[in-house]
Amino acid sequence: MAIDLVERFKQKYELLAGHVHVCAAVEEAVSAVVKVCRDSEAARVAVGEFGDGLSDPVIAGLSSAGFEVYGPEFRGEELPHGIDRAAVGVSGPAFAIAESGTLVEFATNDAYRLVSTLPRVHVGVFCEQDLIETLRESGPRVKAYFDANPENATVTFISGPSRTADIEMKLTLGVHGPEVAHAVIVRA
Image (cartoon, rainbow, N blue to C red; front, side, top):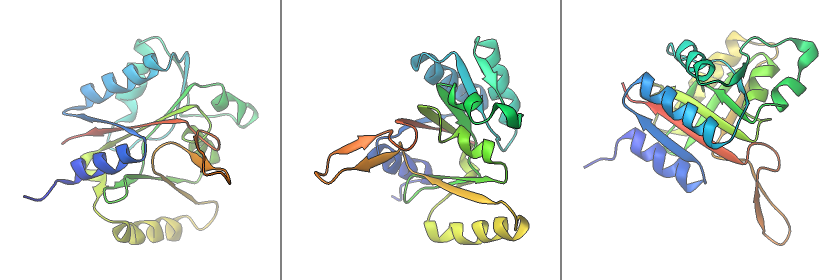
């Protein structure tokens, strides 16, 4: 029996030291995001853009849980410090790749990219329908994005927490980005 894309993504993402939460509905996904923020002892949460109608429920859920929500509208004079003061960044990737356990974010506004790179914890929230099987399948999507946004377009591939190794091969998480990474998948 073939393994489904959600399970394949989960296995790869967790192999890369990420945490995956598979949810049956948007409400369950919001609860998972709130739990990650509470477990991270966050007071401020930076939020970026989301697809599939996830933005309003996630922001409402975080606000009603008592978190200071920063974004998705950002003022240039507050950047990047406004996002850097958030313990958790929550954003919605354009899509995810199952074979590599990768979230793919598109941005024409650098603030949205900072939401997934500056806070200590990042949470990517997306729907199962935004999951593709292979890296090769991402090529046409990335090309279409750059064609539609020839100026100031950025694509970020996120596979678990940030990692780096020194010459002695000691792996360290969180040096150049989040040290903890979560993916919240809404099954639809």
